[in-house]
Amino acid sequence: MDFSRRKFLKSSGQLVLGFQLIPLFSCTGSAKSQPETYSGIPVRPHGDKELIDSWIRLDAAGHVTILTGKQELGQGIRTTLLQMAAEELDVPFEICHIINGDTGQTANEGYTAGSNSVEGSGKAIRQAAAEAKRYMLTLASQTWKEDVANLSVENGIIKNKSNKEISYWKLLEGKHIEGKITGNAIPKSHEEHRLVGKPIARDDIKNLVRGKAHFVHDIRLDGMVHARVLHPPSYGAKLRTYDFSEVSKLEGVLKVIRDGSFIAVIATREYQAVKAWMLMKAISEWETPKIKVSQDSLFEDMKAKSMSPETIENSPDFNSELENASKRVKQEYHRPYHMHASTGPSCAVAEWKSGNLTVWSPTQGVYPLQNSLSDLLGIGTEKIRCIGMPGSGCYGHNGADDVSAEAALIARSFPERPVRLQWMREDEHQWEPYGSAMVIQLEAGIDEEGKIIAWGTNLFSDTHSTRPNGNGGHYISPDIWKRPLNFERRIFRRFLSECNSALYHSFQATFAPQLRRSTQNFSFERIGGLWKYLRAGIIYG
Image (cartoon, rainbow, N blue to C red; front, side):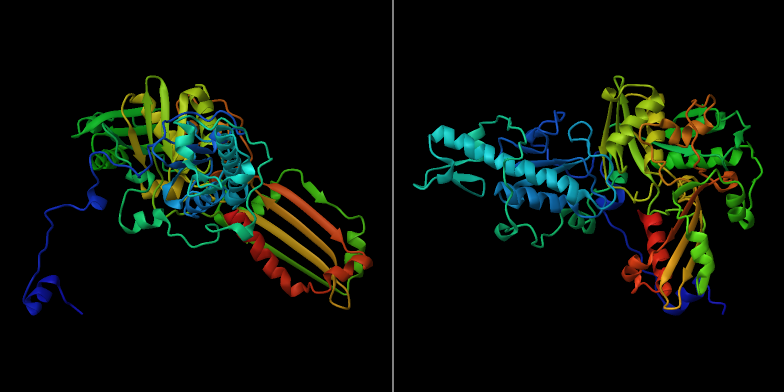
């Protein structure tokens, strides 16, 4: 059907044009904007995990701030942890605020992973809040010279039986809670809960619906500049083009950075950086190595070039039990490399100022990021502050840490101004760390009653643990510098063409007659379900 836009307009008889005089904030942003944070407490490093002040802080304005080393990644822990703290402190939920993952303020709680933020950080915050309440009751008891048993708390107000009252904040008079977490304070039982377990609307979702600044992508700081990185077309590719003078002449371009095959451009505005990136991409020439292993032969190559097996368990009766089985079932499953394909490209903001580095990152672990940047840049961790921000996704180790490292590298070359680096979509798909390919061989022996009497598993896989955790060599950038750092190289192959070795795990087991009762409801038909759970754990764990 030939129906052009011109014919459509003729037949419809009108063309409606619309415009808006006041631009939407969500579309354009302001000169300086970032996700809302409570600024009632001064920035100060945590002293010790055993200090109440490392988890709970009360300011003179009548607010409570909770500090956690865990990241808010969309799972709702900001609201949950605030509920737990407000519950134990007996204060209104509305006056509570939270700071997530900031090496300049929060405790080191490692990675936010494994769905254990409420179990781990929640337990610490709950105990600290109970200790804080106990500390305040003891302080009131000493001030009034009255037994603690005669005191109660409601909405942060301590009362005695004669209705004498004083608030937490008036009692503290602007001082810190100087107590330690002793373990002697007993948290509430679930029968006493009035906030925990109740549905409370999440502010982060409200902000998302209303188009408010929320993600690291939304940060706009005074004097901030924009950057783009031109990654090689493939791993192992070397840059042959040396002249980027035409790029430097483009409007708004502030600097072109080149270190070996690492190329980046800095511009005043983001679209200027994108235009410069497009020109760099057009004029660049690369020496690209051939792919060593094709997709068709990937899994056979993994098995053929695997390292010596690591035996998890080996039953001496396995082969004989398998031979005597009434039925033997064997299958091999393949899992190709998987990209995480986050909703939006990875982004980070970095500022190198007076010899100190600050990075706003969507990482899953601000302290592991801090340690890795220290190793990468050769400076002490005391000079690096990492502030966790929501991003477009990071579960499963996508490009969040890599873009943060590259933002730091660019900021070092352009000090005293914040640098915002956002990957292009092709960067995200091509350069984020893929989930490892795997081969799993399953074999089982079944007796006449349909019970499993022997089970064998062989697993071929690259490692699943290459998050930067103090080792700067796990970032992609050092591989393309002019003078690559001499970091230890691990088994993990970050790209398909170099995947020619794999870890090999072997598990063999037999089930003695006395143990078979526990497997009587475990039919072989359920093995497929087991494999699905295993895959899910590998992909999303």
